[in-house]
Length: 424
Ligand code: GLU
Image 1 (cartoon, rainbow, N blue to C red):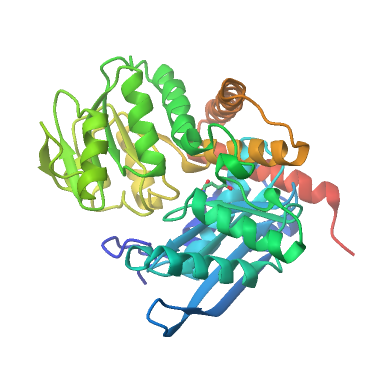
Image 2: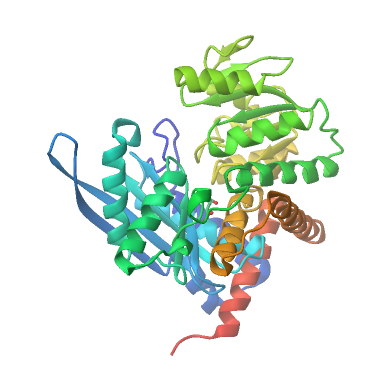
């Protein structure tokens, strides 16, 4: 029954069922054509692969991986690859569906996909990770490609992983195929600004949300769960805006300082010791304490299912900005709504990453690269417009931002599906 990536969290229903329930709510509100509803409720393609990889000691281990394409109505499938020991097919299906809605909310011309390998990258050498990545890429090469399905980093994967994937597909083709993955290193067709893009998008959303609740972000108190690709950039950029990062956490625990944790000290501590705990001038708190801190903005930027029925009642933040995918269960959502907390939903809040992935793919196709200033300006325009579109629907229909974002996204994907018609 536990289907979240974090074994310490508990879900009453599966993540995919939760995703379908949120879709159903939006479909009801839109009075969606029942035929289209049936199409959008299920993933289009589900690929499971089992493949052998040689470990450094010469033994052979068989790994299981997935690539799910949820929808292709608005363009090629798009979504990240996750490496995690507890990842499940159910979770990947849910995350692929979220990608469809995310791309539609920010109006980039993609459908949704997600991939994963069940593995513990923390216990693998770099060479083992490379061999596993290359073989997994080969196994899913029947689905991925620059015109059909474009991969990207997600939990525990990074620019190096994307470089191996790009090289593997390129070796099969006999020429470079940079557009098959995004989030690549700059030296092989990556984009300026991609590394920070998700965090930057989270910050743009927080700035818009702050206007709605009349919160002055200068000296605002922020708690961030996660200090990886998303949380790390979010912390740094909010600190630059003058916010106080009162708490931040990684897998080893959370640290607190009422006057604000110094991000550079936290980063140094993490790089030198592998853990945030012990960052100078901070005190250690638990990850659960962090979620319940007295603060203005809470940013869950780690894994799914962290805000649940058993702890959402303790959230004191005015704004919850979902940097992670699926951090709030539907029960927690209802409680936060009741408490008057403004939740910026994942499919809007963390869409900055896939938006700059889109910029990267466009630049690769044109073989013409943009400056960081151009990228950040375009990202801001897209995120701000998506936020405004969502907030307008929320106002007009008197619903919370998540339902509004789903209505916006599902409406767009349904329109594309109806316009294309059913084949044959
Ligand atoms: N993994 C990221 C996400 O969940 C980025 C996906 C992408 O860039 O394709 O949004």
